[in-house]
Length: 201
Image (cartoon, rainbow, N blue to C red):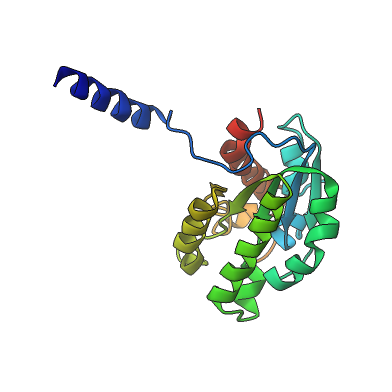
């Protein structure tokens, strides 16, 4: 009885301390690069060259960071360039950020999820880890939040929640209605780094 109690205490303590590490596919990846694969948020729309979040992230990590963001891309366009822009670039970790243009172009949510599932599967088959970015903030893109988290759990991918929270509602951190400015992208980069840091040591 005492042994069972001790096991329960240890388990609960590990959860409270954050010691229960999320299972991530390909955690021993031998790839050399971090690929930031996304749309205008990844590309850095609204900021000058060198002020995008991948550039800021590169200052925080020891691995090379490649910006594979293309403004206007939906998850359908992402699939078309997945091999050339990601898989052929020797990725260790791919940070996947899509849904904004799917929403704007009225792509059904189930199609977005299907495309992201395929993107994650193909990256993992190539031997790399995947991190899935959630750009929801409050009511903004809220319909994607829970399903992205569920997809990340299902695929054993890192989940990066709410990277735009308190950014797109702060005029001093954004360049227009949707996109951050340099200050905002620094916040995005810090949130991405916080989520991935323990997996790229």
